[in-house]
Length: 264
Image (cartoon, rainbow, N blue to C red; front, side):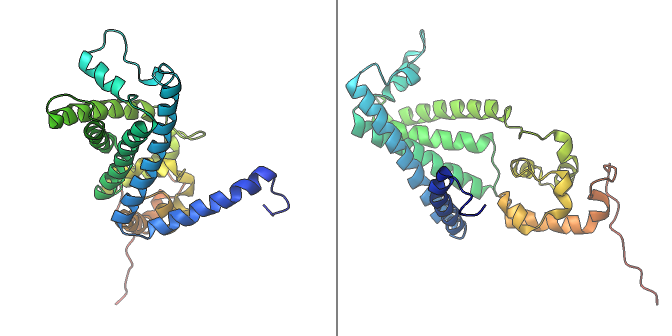
């Protein structure tokens, strides 16, 4: 799209989009600890902004900010206390609490993902949820008695909630216009290589069976697949391209790759 063809909203968004792409490229080239630190700061900034808004609403109208976290009738008193503590305090206190909670969650999520080779699953979500809940409990002083026990119980509550939300959200993550049949060959290949954890990466990037012979290092990198698994996938495609290409029947097992015959 040329500059003349762009609408006014497109022109206004072009700068931020370009900056975001450049920032993502720069972050991807940095060591993992830099990427985790940036994710923590960005998450903390978003949490501080949200906390400031909620704290301001609560200060203006004590009932205005309580609806999202109001404990249900008949809830366990300890759980009700923790839910009520989330919106306690003024704008500065809530900005601090939410900044710590969301910053720790974002940083820990990315750190666990990098440590596990790019795997994203409910275990990583629950680890990050536990860390953010424990940090929130300690910084907000929401528990009475032993602060470490309070941090542990709050972290456990956050982990269970985030794990449940993640599992529910997974059921609605099927990309629009795609079906499991479109990833049959890709899933078969990943299963054979022991890389089935990356099936969701292919689905998010819409790398269907119809594109399988066009895959290259850049496409797999865009799908956030680490270098080692990328090399395995590309080597496998080179060996078995005569079987995995679209239009051929889906194999039940892979034969040996074709061997070169040398005449003595």
